[in-house]
Image 1 (tube, helix red, strand yellow):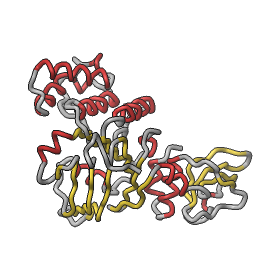
Image 2 (spheres, helix red, strand yellow; image 1 turned 45 degrees about the vertical axis):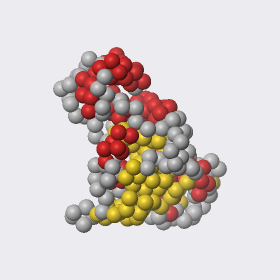
Image 3 (cartoon, rainbow, N blue to C red; image 1 turned 60 degrees about the vertical axis):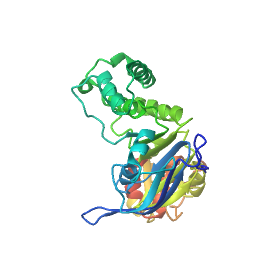
Image 4 (spheres, helix red, strand yellow; image 1 turned 90 degrees about the vertical axis):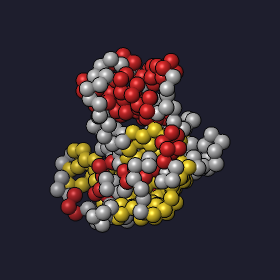
Length: 313
């Protein structure tokens, strides 16, 4: 578990009793409590769980209906300007300024972030472009970038003012496998001396550097702990079995199939069981993956059909 400390400050991101109800009546968050310290913190949950709402509240873009959030000791409602100086944000969709060149986007945002000295600003932009692998396309217009490059530019704009806290929302949607690996490594490197809150429904986004996670579902925190604790909760609930080609309909209730491969005249399946019930002849998997552990956890809640999109077969 994280101890909640960061760079000598007594707290990183502290979320206390946050609730938010949208004007139409939808209760997106229902009493969320979290304390997040230095390093990469993963916030998992299916689409619609309330993750993006929480991200927007932390980033001062949305005033909660109730509760309190502090970023490095600063209240996100009463001290918005102070929070924004400390924080970098990469939203789900980043593709603005399509007619500007890459370096021009960072120039504009660096000015807005308070980097007024031209020499300092130029040096910082050059450093960030090199770090995210965009130095070679600094003069290219945003509209000419690949999807992966646009996400890297999104990371660059979040880092241009050297923030102590980075908030990243659904970072790898639409990226190819190579870009996703590159992104995970970048987050691992950045998390060595910063607070990073990364929200996703794709478990693999967290990578091996994530040491602390929470699962958000239906506006509530339903799990908080280490990846190892989540893995331990899945033991005995992930299995392999050979079934007839038409046998899935006869699997016990609460079973979610992860993968299928031909095996003689039948199918070899890998699956999770919410209640631990397995078909005849099934063999428990001794070392489940984190993706499988997440799916098994959600299966126990009867929500595996929503979580399945976060598991790569």
